[in-house]
Length: 432
Image 1 (tube, rainbow, N blue to C red):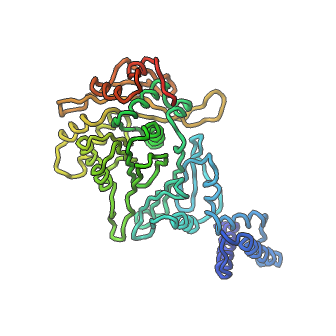
Image 2: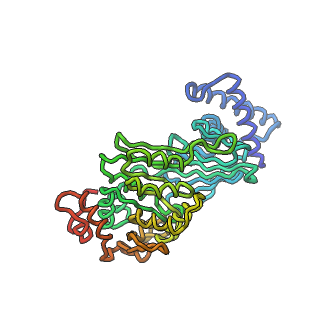
Image 3: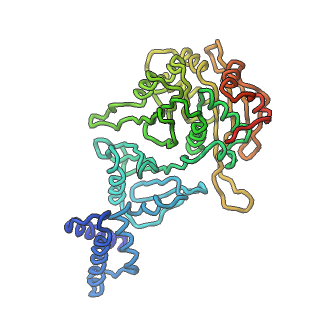
């Protein structure tokens, strides 16, 4: 520990003790708290001038840092407030982050693992989640629902290890996704049409490819007279819902290490209700098996799946359902999904430098795949509707149509005189 960081730790501890002794509230009495901090720093400087301590080079900056530590979120305060920061990583005493250019940077600031652990506990204080040795892995939406925390502490990890992902999907629509270059106008119009008819869509891609953002934009296009149920492990989707729709969130881990309400439980409950569209934020486990029941419930569903391609997404959701351990064969699960999944929307990301500007992240839809019902249980039958040969290249319609029965179902949900054929040929487009 450097002399500077040692001074900061001593002063932060003294300030916290003085604030506690005086029973000051940082929210209701900010000026008194600031004066207490200033007094602690002034006393330190006075002793430094007598040769007891090394004097501070910038007392005002030290007061600012201590204020952030006792009234804010310490060394993370600036990162939380910066709208250009997308993701924050903590490993022991080290902090790094990814900004909207997609680059990983180090946050150069004096801190300790103990202080960062206190910050994590502080952001969790407003949730019903906890992080300690008996519950060493936790996820929670924090900062008034604007970010998601995933944290691991000993004995599972050797040190504090946390990731904070700030939500950036709240305002996106299919129209704004066209403006961002994520999807073509024709493809966005096609997705709008699928949203009118309770279709079932998987959104696939790697971490950070934009799956949740695209699904959020699609959900905004669902008609207001539909009943939507959104279930998530930790709530990440924040979009306006019709009055008769709801968000459900799995309960945290109990002291015994289990969950009172799991994601699978929530999916099962939704399917017992009158639901037009069931949305699972991210499918990773046994909840996938409950989605096989959605076909019998007669509702559409959407979810995100981690995969390297659209077809890999189909295999991923089958594997997740099999892991539920319901003694159902892979061929049966595959056949059910082949008859219930309508489309797969696959996204990818890369780093690029447009013209002479700063390098950034490019997230684009690379494929929209139609799943054709099949009597065979050996594999999925698919047909690409839109493809993008490579990131940065033009997305184009392949000339193919969805299966006839599915196309008719979508056409019935469209305004009079509008059809998928007109949309795909570019003869009509909604107000996105």
